[in-house]
Image (tube, rainbow, N blue to C red):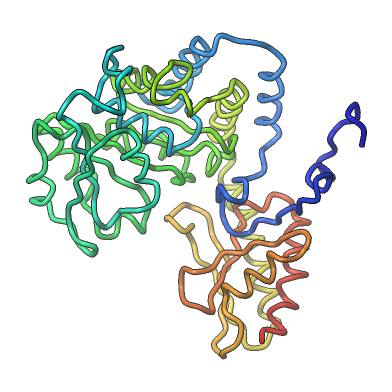
Length: 382
């Protein structure tokens, strides 16, 4: 392929000897998120053709996205983790140039950020990256209102919650957190990175009192993988913008390209106009096909689970086998070793249980390929 030739989609990775992935696991960053819809690709290509004042672009698209998502304000960033770091920095330091310039070595003792022990995860590193002093409350299997109330005060910059069924199981109700925090003039930040569908979540959390909410652009929104969305109160989003690119601040290394900005706008517009009932019908059909195919394998049980790993509104096809032999992790490794690599989900419900997630399977031919590999692998699971 010469430098002057186009980059055909079928060969773009093979050119470098890199295998294409058939992704039936989830919108994982390590797998490149999801394939971009045509509207998103077109918006990114249009953005790439011209120069623009990035600050002006962020302000204009933020106002547009705020109207679309029924929020006071919005800001495109380069991922939900970047959004979390910027949100925490905004709550600690505010928007003043001197405070922004000094972050994350803040000149204030109002640096305490409350996290729930039952919600600790690798993404809360973004809280520390913003210069926060993390205060952990609660137990691994329970959190009580008095534990939160005891840590709220003039030195508390924010409370951070992670949305999703696995995080919320042992946490506090959002309304309870908002009531206690707002009594002490402490803002509440929600990391809702993967909480779409339903699309109504774009205004659901702020409608329940959260001050800032963060979404990944490359997960349920199906936008650019290195994009994210900050939504919420106007003064706090403005403070996030002060700490963000293109300013020489904490977020300078979290650069948001003009292509990502317009790609995410196109993704949000698409999500708001999508026929979600039709999408669910398509996913259900793929789940049904998967279950039917796996029902032909002796000793394998297959069933439908109505929601995603974090409670998202899409179904999955689970399957399991009782006899000893290959584990789900080993089966997944075997499938991922092929060309193209096939990735299935596992690790949620026992060592011999796995699943196929249709949410990221846009091409019916990819499901055919997956089943052509998965069924024989299960037939010889030793």
